[in-house]
Structures are given as C-alpha cells and as structure tokens.
Amino acid sequence: MVTPPKQSPATQAITAGRAHSGKSLAPALWASSTWESDGLDDANRRATSTRHNDFYSRYANPTVEQFEHAVAELEGAEAALAFGSGMGAIAATVFALCGTGSHIVAQRQLYAGTLAFLQGPCQRMGIDVTFIDVSTPGAFAEAVIPGRTMLVIAESPSNPRLELADLDELGSIRGPLTLVDSTFATPLGQQPLAHGVDISLHSATKGIAGHNDATLGVIAGDCDLLDDIWAYAVLHGSTPSPFDALNALRGIRTLGVRTRQQNESARSVAVMLADHPMVSVVHYPGLSEHPQHALASRQLLQYGTVLSFEVADRAAAQRFLASVQIARCATSLGGPETLVCHPATTTHASLTLDEQVTTGVTDGLIRLSVGLEETVDILADIEQALAAQP
Image (spheres, helix red, strand yellow):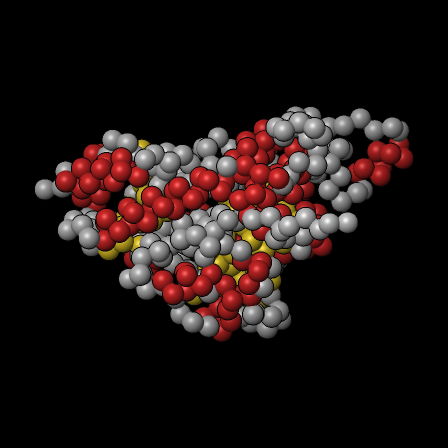
C-alpha cells in the first residue's frame, strides 16, 4: 500500500473536517438540538458517553465536531474542543482545571477580557494569579509554585502590541499545564503544541473563521485532557452553534490563501509605517528592528496579519480613525476587511489607567487588522489618513 505524501497545512485546511459530510463537498449542517434514542438503554448509553455527537448538542454536535477535527489536524493535536466564544474557551478551560487554592501564572500583556476574567471571577473563586512580563526570560518558570500552580497562560502574539512568549521556554515547564492563546497567529502561523505546550487556544471568531460571521472559541491538545475539560464545559454551557461551526469550516477552507495575502500586505504596511514621520513606533514582529524579531523568526511560520503603531496622542488617533476610507473602524480582526481600532477606548477600555500604562496601551496606540483589499489600496488609505494629521 502506497503511503500518501504528507500534506502541507494549507492543503490540510481544505481536506480536514469532512467526516460527517458524506459525498458533499460542503460541510453538512446538523441544526438539531437533540436526537431520538431507541429506548432507555440507548438513551443512557448516549447520556453517559464522552462527547457523544447525536444525543444533545450541548454535549456535542456533528457539525461542530467536523470543525473540531479540522482544527485538531491543523494544530497537529489529538483532539480539539469548541466553545461559544474565545472567552468561553478561556473561562471553561480555567475553571475545569483550577479551583479554590489553585495558582495561575499569566503574562501581564493580555487581551483585556482575559485579564479581567483572571483578576475578577478567578480571584473571587479563590484562584490566585501571578502576572509576569512576557519579555523577561525565565519569568514564567520562576513564578511557578510547585504543587500549587495548575496553569501557565500566555498570549502570543499578544493583543494589541504583539509581544511574543518563548514557546520553547513554556513547553519546557514541568508540573502545571501550559496554555497559549494563539489567536493572532492562527494554526497556519504558529504551532504551540510542537513546542511542548499542552493547550493551544483560539478565538476562532477571528482569523480561523475569517469572515466576521461566526462567534467561536476552540482549544486543541491531548485527547484525555480535552475530555476532562469537556466534562466541565457541558456544565459551563458555553455551547458552540452549529451554524457558526459551519461558517468557521468554510473559513478554514480558505485560511491558507487568506493569511498568505494578509501577511504580505501587513508586512508592506509595517515597512511603510516604520518610515512615516507621524508614527513613533510600529509593533510588528516581522520587522527586523522589532525587539523580538529573532524569536519571531524561530517560532512563527507567518509573521501575522495584525500590527499596531503609535501616533502622537489620542487626538491624533481619533483623526486617523475618522479619516480612513477603505479601512473600517471596528474591534475585531482576521476578516476580509481591513479594520482599525483604538485599544485604549475599545478592546482594553476596561483596564485602569495604571494597567494601560503597564501593558503599553497608550492613548496614541492604533491596532490594524489587515484585510484582503489590494495592498496598494490599503497603503494609500493609511497614507492619506496619516496626512490628515496637523
């Protein structure tokens, strides 16, 4: 028997997640919330099985399962588990693995929703959290408390300044489980599990689904670990919609070509901004002058579709956002449209002023998610919006 050649990730994105589609080229939509059983014994078997996909859709759903299989294959994982949102994935995973008296190590440079969850609900539940600076070598391992630390959380590249965690360093930590929010990278841009990390997490709402029409979270990792998390997740209730899973599967089919184009445009934008007199600094690991460029070159397969940059102040940021014509002012990323946002007043508005200073969310910081428009048009739009500055 001839062994088929190993597929490239972009090809895997086309072929993965088709188990429940039969001969259909489009994924099958299973919209049912519940399935009929053949009596008491069959109902009991379904109810007590792990992730049975034709019992009740809070437990599992065939369309959602196809999406999970596709993500698992792209991540090089045994399994994946989907949730109703990225925050649903974070919350359910943390509460599945931690309880009163547990300790978490997390980087300080996090999406504000994750930060608020760790500082609010977690601490109210008696879960202690130690925050470290992701750019400090060895900081994650040094903060681990043997016997108490249950989870180490990183977000790489981070939102919104694109700081990187050293995945090899994370993967070498023994004792607690390690988790990387890899949303900005997508599975085609980064493989946390290949570095020894236990759980890769995505807000699949973003680049994975890629069309601003699905709200999903997903984790990938060892099958037994994910089954344990699933046992809590069905009680947590962050249930993914099969309609969103269908849209995300469609998005996965074009993930390769989308991210390739967006990465090329993002680098062109970053190079242009780096030389612009109205911009003080550009945060994009694909630039050779980025302080973590060497680390990015070692662990990122693509430098990314998102970047951020800093103008003089909030007024300058406000003028920029009001002046763009092709780019749209919206607080998401990874879709076909180029989006701009002001993190200090949107994605990270929940942070205190001190927290904004600590995490580098300045009044002049602008986040840019590069879309699929022609690169020359994106560049021209940004150029004219910057020219609107006094």
